[in-house]
Image (cartoon, rainbow, N blue to C red; front, side, top):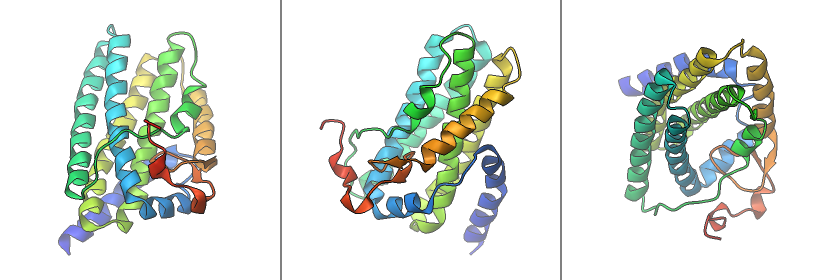
Amino acid sequence: MVRIIYRIQYMTMLIPEIEAFLQCQTPQSWIDWALEHPEELLLDHANCEKKAAGTALTLMFRYPEREELLQHLSRLAREELRHFEQVTAIMKKRGIRYRQITASSYAQRLHKHTAKQEPEKLIDSLIILAFIEARSCERFYRLAPHLDEELGRFYTSLLKSEARHFEGYLRMAERYAKQPITERVAFFAEVEREAILTEDEVFRFHSGVPKAQHDLNPAVATADA
């Protein structure tokens, strides 16, 4: 009982700052779809953790002169890889084989608006990554109460790190921007909101509203198809 009470209190304390940053909540239809497809949820979650680590490493090589950014990204990449190991360990216990699956259009919908020139390109990239981390945190929060004890506890444990990643990316954007980032944050907030509320053909961790749910079979859409 003590553990459950602590978990609820922790979740209540964390979510307001994420909700203030995002322009909409995850639709209930996405939550229902996730609960009906736990294998796809875990598969794409694992892939998201791996991609997050890869993105951090890519930025480290792209911006080697940004010392503070390098240190931040190095810590973040290690943490994301640890999360990948944790997700795949849970998958193994549940008899789910890890495999690559196709991504949703979520990240592409954000990244296509990235500036072409520096330093605006870096600033936009960091803002976008802040939104991705914030949405991850919000979805862990929305899902956790509906999951079994092991997975619910694990998703709750990720809230603090995801919130920290979101805050860190936003802080780095402010650190390296030559002017206030308020307008760009507001712009990407609207783009992100539209991405979340737009219908998607396949269910993924960051997908929008599932389209024609009864006709879709996410397990079929693999990267090898």
